[in-house]
Image 1 (cartoon, rainbow, N blue to C red):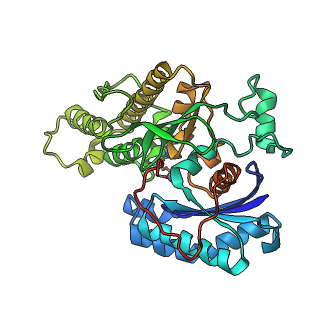
Image 2 (image 1 turned 45 degrees about the vertical axis):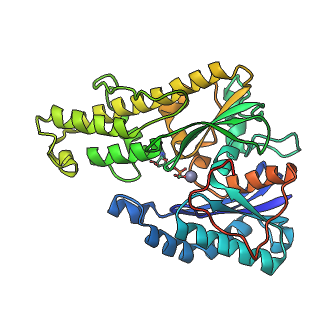
Length: 365
Ligand code: KG4
Ligand code: ZN
């Protein structure tokens, strides 16, 4: 079964063809990072207009890279929630139109669900598909077979993206219970805001990770937030970094945060990046340990979302499943794979004349 997955929830225009939920036949991602690096963040209306320009060329390239015509495609899957309203509209309207035009069943996929399912891409599903060459090479080097096997249930999914930080309990395919969530900022958002304070380019996650390579992670100490149970809070960590930078520079707390970067040395930026990254990763790892204690039935942990690309996080959770780095961020392959498992779970296609978008809906709905 070949599914065309379409993803436009934020600032990536993406489409992919995935066979049987496992083999990537094509994966096209056009990023708008260059546009938004100039502004230091995403401007929703600009994002929507860029999606509109890129959408059909991206879909056509996904088909031609996969050497598929419309006759070969069995279903279309699209992100319908959550995300930026204008961005979601472009992807869903495109998918609705294509589904009607080519008479294909249409599946509407929640964005966080698709991030979680990035962990099934290329890992096999008991079918006959082969893993990618990258994974073959990785497995040859590794004694562990995590790269090959699918994560066993029940599992915990740590979803860490620009908009969400949640721990999900997943007893079986396509079933999600939120057992921890952030009270304020998402961890990716926190990386982006701290990067701004340090004068590092957007998106902040990769630039903090890069700057941190040359930094001393023990140089600055930031308190862990006191949040009940498995919930998170990241806005205090951002403020703690801000106050420590001001203090380090001998500037008052009234000093504007956008000017601090002009006073920081390369060394200070690297040390702040490394110390912040370590704190953020420690907080995530701590909550996962706590969740595992509370749920002794858990068989595996999967990590998902843009922040799952982070190397320090991968090192802090060596037993966890992570997507291939190129599938950590937004892409169409994970949407197609999520839809495949929806179909396996008996989910019926959605009405292409009626599919709506939901910028804020929860994964439990
Ligand atoms: O999943 P994603 O691509 O989009 C959303 O659904 O939000 O996640 C984007 C977030 C951004 O906050 C970005 O800074 C962060 O993921 N990110 C990272 C890394 N790569 C992307 N954070 C930490 N380390 C990284 N290597
Ligand atoms: Zn995402």
